[in-house]
Length: 360
Ligand SMILES: Nc1ncnc2c1ncn2[C@@H]1O[C@H](COP(=O)(O)OP(=O)(O)O)[C@@H](O)[C@H]1O
Ligand SMILES: [Mg+2]
Image 1: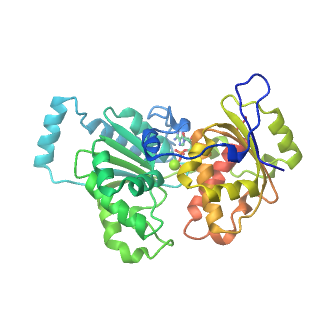
Image 2: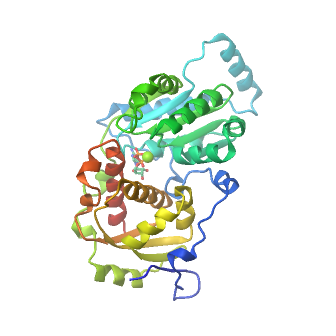
Image 3: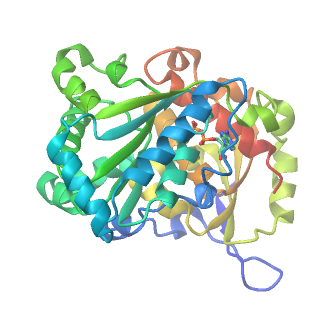
């Protein structure tokens, strides 16, 4: 089966394209211009966050973030600026940033986007991976200069995978928070545990300590919010047979954009040819993605690329349907699921479960 994409907007019959026909090339300027919360979180607010009554840390996190955001003095308020300066001179500098730590699905990203929306002034919202990409492309000095202009920088999914991004994160965070900028970040990992199981993080205790010192940690307890609405695990019933998948694809009319049908093998081969920063661009023209034959991934790189694609697809709110040759959970090999990236894979399975159960 060849990959195909059909474009919408031309009457009742959507046209057909292939994976290769989407130009996924993206410039740094375009990446920077896109620093806003993704569609899934475009309307996330403190008011729409429903704290679990059984988890006091959720109510506490909302209260603390509301206060934090309200205290960020907008440039255009002289009174706030005056008191901000007074406070800066008279109080010892504590941690400047906020670090939302917790399992997947407790609403960290929701609260991050809510904080973004509640802040006036210049603000940016991006993933840690996008931040690392921009620093790589623009250089550290230029990136620090650029981000120092923001009142609030929201960084989703902070994680340290290697020595390179540990050094980069340390330099960026310590420099940017020296000015007037504030940072809120989300992570599945406590600052002190960053990097564990992924690289020789013990040798970088000092740097990791410096990163941790920049943040007040808000630990958010609770279960995956999606489980309040969706079954705990997507099972085979949410996956389709290849025949059903094809029929669903034929019948699908995306509300926005085009639809794509690809085999899992074609998809993973295509992803390997692109820089992950381009995945969003690949998805931009699409309203629905149909993948035939999800199967156990033989290689950690393939698995991590797929995780990243699903993250983007989920954030963009794109319809997703799939068939598989195995149980959904088994697309990630047990030996990967239990190691340094375990949380990533579990988060991906949770998101896939939600996506597969969402009505088109
Ligand atoms: N307490 C909550 N109230 C309302 N919506 C929530 C809550 N927690 C999570 N959600 C929603 O559940 C989904 C998953 O939450 P998300 O913020 O992505 O979790 P996390 O970033 O912690 O993995 C999102 O659609 C989010 O808006
Ligand atoms: Mg999140």
